[in-house]
Image (tube, rainbow, N blue to C red; front, side):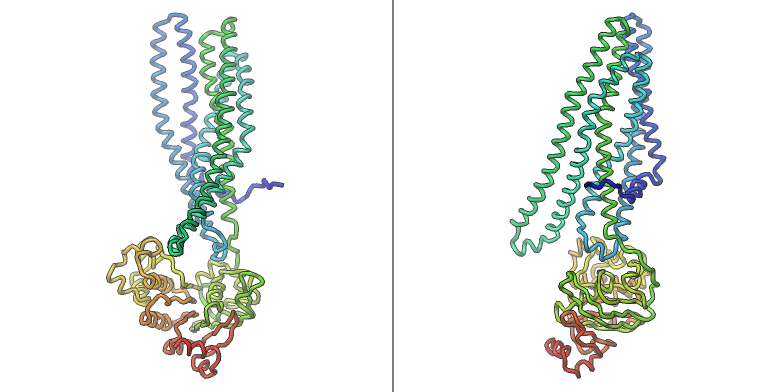
Length: 573
């Protein structure tokens, strides 16, 4: 059975449209409603003109023309101001809606975000927002305006002729019933298009991100096939939606609505011939019938479209809620005792553990190296310490607090990770280092020096634009920026996962030594560069093999054992 329960979190997103925006909404509605007496006045004017013609009152005809022109000018001026007020409300509301959505998404933890496809977010913040603009926000003005105009028109009709009004109301039921019948299917098809856009966006992002790989493996034809599959599917969903709209339009606009107009015309003609109403009244009813028709034709459709758009808001609330960051205990950004792992086992799949019964301790303020062959679990361990994975067995504690009970945000205030894969924004070198925050110039300069970026800054300047994901820089330069970021941030714990792999030997040695000489930090460094001059500086070296801690100790101690570490070191030389 389908679950139609509304997501309570959607209320927050609905409220965001009106936050600091109610005045613009009220002005837009009031100015919209001002059109109603103008429209009714023009309808009355047309009837009065017909009756004036029948009575041959030339002087009255001139006065009616002057009043009509005045009404038209006033209507045009109100329309300009109304359009401005509505635009202010809609675009301010959309800005606040998107800001709230991004704020909620950015609150997710690293582990939560890693489980999801960013194509979903791209879709709900682009395609779906475009739909919300027309079908939800602008529609509310139309629905309020047309609904009030419908009621006022009926009252105006009653004042003219109760009999004609009764006949008109009965005839209105025809197109209204048609629109209501088609509404549920329109909702389903709008949702299907939104889901299709999400899949298409995810596939397109994948293909563009992997462009170099596709070219390198000459997989262009396969990429074209994958693109064409998603392209065909989304356009098929759009075609089905368009077909349903055409069906609704054909039945409502070209069959039921004309039947209503013709019915009113002939009933009015019949009553006029009998002498129950004047010719002018018949003309007024025909004109007023247009206002009723607009309501009958558009409001059910707009209500259905608004309901479908509400479904998109529910979808965003669900996406933002899924895998939300866990609530945990806030810890201070200070490491007093250390980080301890006791009998930790973890795997991406339950049947294949990557880390096996791992126990180790990182004392506060000390420096540690983590070495091992490729695939030994080094990167997995680093990400685990950053709170990147839940569901581990055993215990990981930070100053005695279990890692999975700690608030992720406070954990990020304590620990920084410099990984192998570096992401740079399409912005300046300085803003990529500072991550768009303000820091004293001296601290930025120190981070630049320690990370080996000084030469780049001297040659190109801090305002040099890096390009998309640092396309304007070499791999080593991108890596230095990531190191400078972490050094500038200055968290008490620094994790480096092959952070110097892209640097030449001389620069790598200098950067690593600079990090090792930082006072007061707890450092865990994954390295494949087994150089005695650096290894001797670590308080302890942890040696992993197949996810298990094979050996640990100081450099000289491990070399004297002539065990697994000794073999790794000998091969490296």
